[in-house]
Image: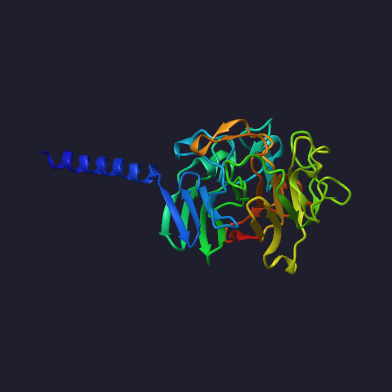
Length: 355
């Protein structure tokens, strides 16, 4: 074989294989297990597939909604269990201005941008950096400049970790490499403490450690106000059942709560407590972010999920700790802009107990 042709062939083959290795990350399912608590995660969308936890009698149930196989998540519009970004929640008008430049984003939600656009972080394959079954799973993703309209290259990492026998932590980090950019990552897990296939969550008792909400318009875009919950159906400062005031809010809840931040924002703030009397399961949530989106799966269609279960409206609740929605268009909200040399950090900690 001609030497020049041979070199050319090797060069082309190496380029092709390099593209396959770089662009076609293998999709897998990874389990974390310690005692009775076990979690399954896929690197497709860094998605939580299941959380198995005991009830008061020791019976294990899966308390997360989802699908039987990873393929079900590829055409999923509900964001079951996904890690959403580059900017979670909504950006009004699918645009924002940063340093005098207007950025146009995909309008995938009634003229607005939802959960990062038409192909956000929930729809990409993440790289498995490390997996220790009894400890943690770390996934990474490199988001390129102008991906879904956002500025700059962004290096992203998420670690799911088991702490002791009853705690699940999620640690999200991101580093802009060359341009300032908004970052707001969130875990979009759908919970039903009685079991994923047990009906609605209206009888669950919830306490939200938040005295205010960020009100929204008819398209669920914040108005820019921060309003007290006292005397409204949004007040969960005293524990009560999720469905106790549905007569005043027939569509349910889909709103960002401004958490009552403790410790000057330098430490974890307790965001929520949820309890299911039927199973005895209790879930508590802490975070280092200022907000939590409380969503009662109002827009969940009759979706066929795990083991043929049909998930109807209000079959689950979501507690998505986050920066405030549409912060890029509201200077009075905590900023989500992260500059090169800075690091975005977001931590969630769940504790599961029974009573």
